[in-house]
Length: 312
Image (cartoon, rainbow, N blue to C red; front, side, top):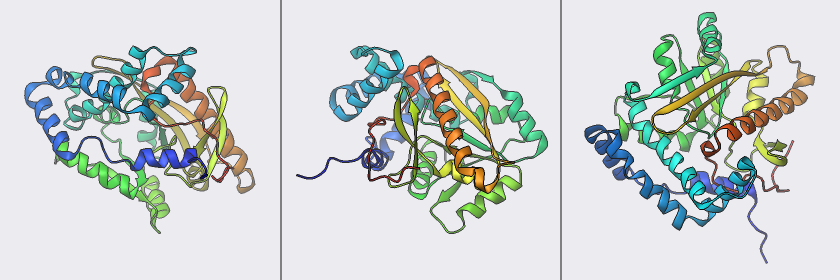
């Protein structure tokens, strides 16, 4: 009998799984949204959520498991539906955010002074996000902070998919992406930081096989990728947390807060400092997930421990 797939394998499968909607569908949704309005575009979101609820058993189980932890009780069917609906809604809102239709949204920013201070000092920092809510709403912050420059670090395959999606939504939309897995990836990150760019990363999902740090998350051990924290520690940079929570309707709440500072960390202190940073990151994600439980968009078995993954 073959061994069951590990959580790293399942996570990688989720990342690599073919999109359930192709670029034609995305372009059609974009046309409907921009020509008929956001309200008309949102009419199909219920159908998308119902599809996942009825025909995506793995994602449904993952949603049920997560919501039970976030809500502190078994979720009702309508709450699982709402979870999928929130995911579809944030994807749909990218159409407007990428086309700079910020007038359609009620976006409230907490911790904006942190970003203003970073821009004023011209110091590059890491901005750690998660698959929670929308990272795209940071574009609205960029409108308020003209000097804000953000480059995203991601794997090359994901970068290709993102660029294809951006072209489908708005051919003029661009995103500065630093691809991982290349010989000069670290050098590119270092150069962006030195010229004052904020380097964004998502610290809650890997492609499988990556080194991981196991920390408490909702009262149980969960693996978080070690790579983002190792990079921040090696480059001796501060790390800010950013979450853009979807509150329903047209409202988003963006939160910035200090997360870690590796500026004065010595080589011998790195491992302990990285573990402490990951633990704080998981604790803050727990806080925001309890506050806005339908915003967590990792639809795989996040808590399944495995022995074949390198754990720090």
